[in-house]
Image (cartoon, rainbow, N blue to C red):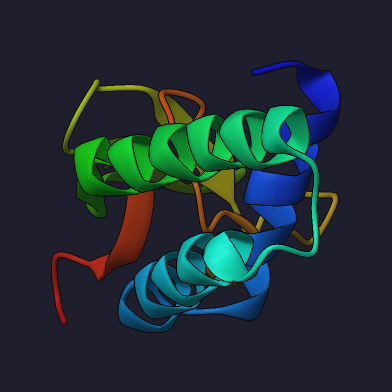
Length: 113
């Protein structure tokens, strides 16, 4: 997969939740067999869809764990990789501004939810 496909997959994750995205990818893959595309296009597109489905199934799900609270903000740590973020600091960023960790994990709330 190249950068363009990575970007499209990231956008798709923002538009669909996991179940809907998987269902949409499977439907699109089946559509390829209708005969509207050349053989090379069908093979390439099936490969792209298979890669997307594989990455969707491999995707990690984590939570933000509150570790510290200071005058500068509230510190959270990723449950998957341990990366530290600071929220509600001078720049006003909230926990909702971090739906993904840099390790690729989708963050499903925090430890209190």
